Image (cartoon, rainbow, N blue to C red; front, side):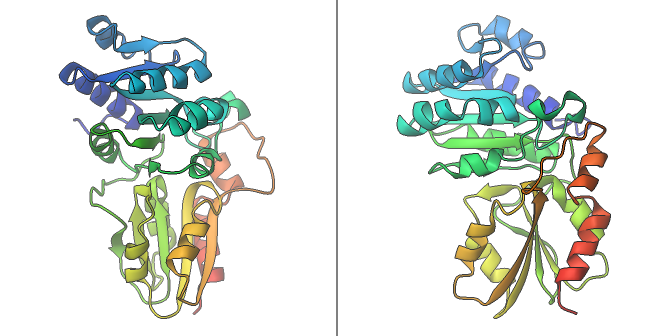
Length: 299
């Protein structure tokens, strides 16, 4: 797969390959990306279905495919896939114990010019309120491809969160990967946050862990990275503190302090502008993260 493709383009190309190769896989769309998948839809009209701008029906149709024995890949923007169709995710998938691969694009604020309707900083927190989900937050197109290919076999429930932001290099390992070692705290960077965390922590004596899969939470990997007393900084590209519970559970018998960085909880950012403007508003740019790290970590 050429690395010049972004995450969304990589996902669409990979999904087309999968449908052509596997007669047990279906793709369900709600207009979004239908044009890019028009070719495979013509080849497999019974397994590539566009329900139009009907996101609740999108998830229900995917659940129907799953109950009929197919493996559905369900795709649209994150705000429409998770927030608008949350009841169908809860009832048609989880309550029916049906498996599916949900793939979103748009992240927290990838499309600021489209306004608040296309923003979904709370998507992972919503998925986290339901049992038995895998949550993948790739930080590079090659990770997105690998995680999609790994997610299709089986009947698990999977959420793959694609972003317009990406790191310079892929990290394809399993679990929390140690990218940098230090002795004065652990910074856990999720998905596309890694490069800016590395820039922000330059010169600091900290361990940097990387996660492209955040559920299940790699408690053993975090425990292995901390000492008897731990300072932890959690940097997620969605609602601040989404994984704080899992950190606390992993370190329940270890004295620790936790700083959670992510999109704001106490105010709604109504800026249009560009993604960089939202990074600044949420203090998720490298400079703001650096200030937070230096203020929190012990000298």
